[in-house]
Image 1 (cartoon, rainbow, N blue to C red):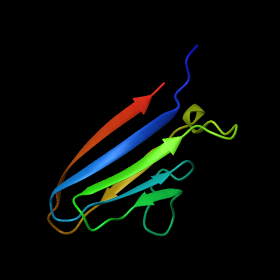
Image 2 (cartoon, one colour):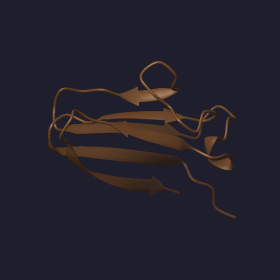
Image 3 (cartoon, rainbow, N blue to C red):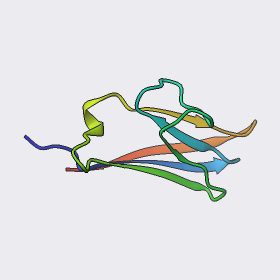
Length: 82
């Protein structure tokens, strides 16, 4: 049985500035309630979740939210490593 080593959530803002928030417990993460965030001023935001130290983040639900300015377009991609 193979287990994930890492999961990457990549957000590319095509128009405006979108921000990415991740939570392992709250289904609606936001700028005040999150476990991981990537709020950059560039067009690429990324959060990498790694399975290390005996904590397996991949045996639970991972919630993420994207917030953007009034008019924002973006693309989201997921990369993983076994």
